[in-house]
Amino acid sequence: MATALLLAARGSDVVITYRSNEGAAQAAVQAIEGHGQRALALALDLRDAEAAASTVEQAAQAMGGLHTLVHAAGPHIPQQHLSKVSPAIYADALIEEAGGFFNVASPSLTHLRHAQGSLVAITTAATQRYPVRDGLSSATKGAIEQMVKAIAAEEGRYGVRANSVGPGMLTDGMAARLMASGDLDEDALAVTRANIPLRRFGTANDIAEAVCFLAGSRAGFISGQHLCVDGGYSV
Image (tube, rainbow, N blue to C red):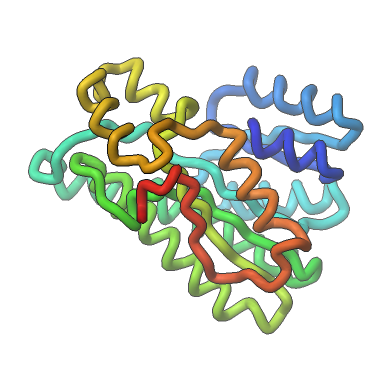
């Protein structure tokens, strides 16, 4: 929600999608409208390519076009060694993460070309420095980052930019769920914090700032890049 709210605060109408949590989506719509911007929430399972294409068209028609696509979706992934990940589980994760991204990015390209717009995918800093037990997440998100680079290379001639943002350890989102579930205990958190030069965790607002910068005109000559927002972890 932080990215959607910051986009609205800076003057953008926003369409958000949700898979199951309609209540949170409608709360986000109300918050966006509180900034004086138009907002719409649409249900979408990104694994359904036809539904993703239809949702992109619906969003573009509702808002009079599509200037920016922010991909900020993914399943909850438990921390586990790759030796305990079956090929079937990995295949499902790849379809859900990388496949889901492509399902929504592909039908967006026509609209982004028309607007000379921007695509920003939120992935992970773990593709730059690998934390043990995070392979199921970093490997699938790495595929998204490569697609982002490919889009930047192929679509730049139409004025389209594409970049990715790699969150490090945050106090929000999946990290918070891992802490709550016990996947990351106090000892693991202490080790993680020691590996971060700033010696602290980030927030969803830190990620939102990076996304909005890359999406906007101030980053007009930046494309095909991966920006880690991780307190220096990937150094």
